[in-house]
Amino acid sequence: MQIETLKQPTETQLDQLMTIWLAGNLTAHAFVKADYWRKQLPAVRAALPTARLTIATEANQIIGFIGLQGNYIAGIFVAATAQKNGVGTALLATAKTQQPKLQLDVYVANRVAVAFYHHSDFQVHRQTIDKATHQPEYQMRWHR
Image (cartoon, rainbow, N blue to C red; front, side, top):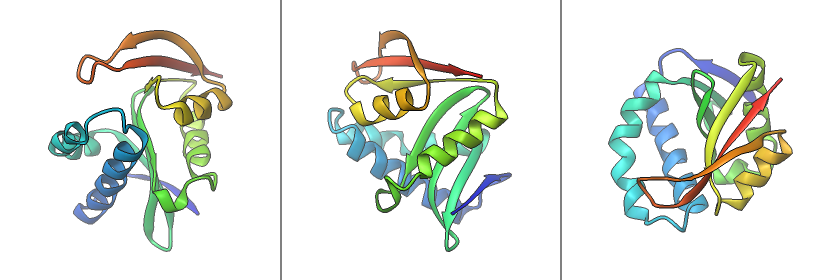
């Protein structure tokens, strides 16, 4: 597995990122209507190049990525076939070397992700309701 930061993603890379993003959201967030995620596709595709994107690749295929906006983790997504192999941990470790503190929002109902972040030394700072989906979410923070 290779980890690298994308300077300017190509259309092919954006296609791969969006495939991983959509599949990850549909799988991890079954409690949110699938249509919600599909409607977000254009906005997310436009936003990805504005984030600091770090990708994990194998055989020149993107298998996971993390998107940072400053110290905010907009998301970590790993292809289903690459999950439970340390890809998310490696991407998060890279982000931790780039920023002295990180924060993110995660749905409370996404228990796998909440456990992953707890295991990675993130602490719940507060709980809110996501206005778009009406789902409870945690704001979690980590610092060196």
